[in-house]
Image (cartoon, rainbow, N blue to C red; front, side):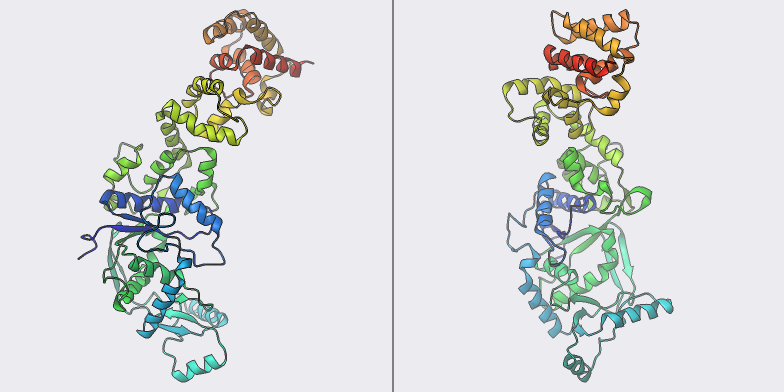
Length: 497
């Protein structure tokens, strides 16, 4: 039975060594979408065999990342499954047993080369203009040579004997690919301290967990010959059911200057999007566009729409450029689709984290229901919404004006405008948007002859603290008469000479 005839089983297997990276999460999304489209199984596996770099904090960040993106998994940490455990640090006995079987079957050998000897070998290859790589020094050691190294107490690593034939496969994204025999050297699968490496544990778990399709990044393309060689060796020694996974290599995610998006790039870290208030729907939508599209004339689509249409053969193999401006614009589109109650519910945690909201009482709820529609069309992220709503929620004693905006619009020259606005608003009998607008236009535009920008700009900064805010007249109504006049008084005091 070919992999195409078996139920699809794909895996996402990150190492917990830092903040989740958007390129990594694009890989998770494509695997998840393929599993959901085919009715298959999405496996979440943690590759944490590097004790020097792995951390529990990073592990939890990975779990939280998939949950935040709504990429649920069928097998893995927390949910369990038939192949538990799904953290490789808890599967060391399995890898030790497989490594022993590979040794007994002649697929591996012990390498006693010292770091100095390996460096000298690399320098020789460089001088002779040969590709660098292990030269097979220890591949055919005699029993006497091995005994001599052991007697000297030389540490050793375990190397896999690379096959001596061409490697071919039909890549699910790139089509037919061939690697000629020779360039891929024998590689290490177990460190000198006994810890198994990715080169062993990754293919072992793929085979044992019945993975049918491996969708991974293009950066791993060059390691595919050794991956396939290990798959074949494992099947030879009776690990797995004799099937090899099909492979597809997803395009690079590029950053500025056509360089591969680095973990050091601010836009690469998921935490930035969570903290600034991007929507999961917006980010997953944009990540999907990094190599795939629903149609040529449509950028915005839901996860379910992606699942319904996803075809791994339609992934574009060309590098995809991460454009933060486009990502942000798409997120803004998603914000505008939200129902009012949903948008408020998403804003509340951010407002509470910034100390702007303690308990959501009826008065606060009523105020948000009036104010949030005013900002929904103006913001690209929830964080921008919090900034715009801040003037309504902060105590008057803590209210402050943006220094740059205040320096430009709250000056001795604008003080007469502020005074006229204060007097006009104080005389209002009815405090509503229409009355406020009528009064201010009559006083400042018609009475003082000011252009609207010059008339309303100082008032906006005085009451909201910023030049960019929700509509002024509606803001004044929601803020209320007393608080509005109090802030105008504060601005008048600040501009007094």
